[in-house]
Length: 225
Length: 258
Figure 1 (spheres, rainbow over the protein chains, first blue to last red):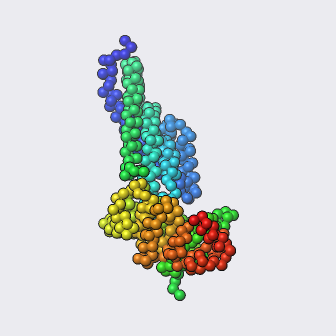
Figure 2 (tube, rainbow over the protein chains, first blue to last red):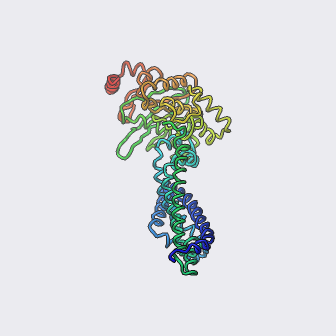
Figure 3 (cartoon, rainbow over the protein chains, first blue to last red):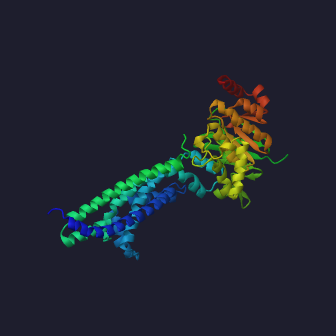
């Protein structure tokens, strides 16, 4: 028989446990990406030349090399320099770095779209750069870019199977192990694909809700225009 | 003679080859109300922007209340001010912008509380009291919890005035504050400025196209032309009996346009 339901029920608990690892890797990686991206975007706006050039160079470097190579580099090459990381940590850092550099471009667009008058009003009120970013600029820059950041969350989620290359026991790696034990690949691989499809759709719906919420509360409070 | 509140000492500002202000000397006494008029591109807005430290100057020194603003003392000589020094001296100056520049994600109250809390270190309660009092003063006590998008242009500009006043500046700068308003909203903003003039000890500099208001309100009118003060004096003299041909031409062009 091409599709064996008994086998599906047998492997489902194992795959569900592995899906927890996939979700953990996604969320940790994205938190890192979101924070790092914002930091990089702000550094790129620095008036000090070497800071903005270094940040821009870092972003270009990371974006122009494949994430799989970055994963391998952190896991296999860093130990040569005395930095030994568990596979999960190496994978999360690589995904966070890679998507952080993409997110920084998104943040940059958001930051640049805040009208110049907002900066000038902040200067005229003598607000420090930190307070200006925290209270004035970032609350206006982020809501419009939430959809773009959300797309990267979904993209990062769909890249987590790459972590199977360094033997993180996430969904893909687990499915491969199940397949090699039973010589049945149809069910585990199909289930994993289905899981990614469902989760991506759920995440996209969640992002739409979040976007609507942010538009209401931050960007256009009071609702009138 | 008392120390001038604002003093431009031989100030030059240029963008590349374009000289916007050419060796400007200007002294403004404490409490004096000065209106700056002139054709576009004459450098009048630049005067305010330099004083607010939004633009760096190329040459000369600006003093506020006897202290250098654009420069600081270092080993007995004046060197260009760094960011830290600017943060200390800039507090003497407040500015109201043509396009209001209110923070759209904050209520009128919060707009007026943000800087007093984070710059002056006021307690929240104290900042709220001060903001409420100022919003009352500009006639918006009822609207204090509204967001900028819920207010008319004139109301937004009055919030912006209250926001600047909350920092208790010694010098207030008004940069074409009624130019972006529908005509019927101009009066309410000018009334607030009139009130400030009589009730507060403030030195005021305003760039304006409201010639009637400049004539009635200002102690002195400066006519800018080509990056220099072409003519200055009491409003009556400038408007009724200007000496310079350029001033006459400008005024008749403005009056003709109505």
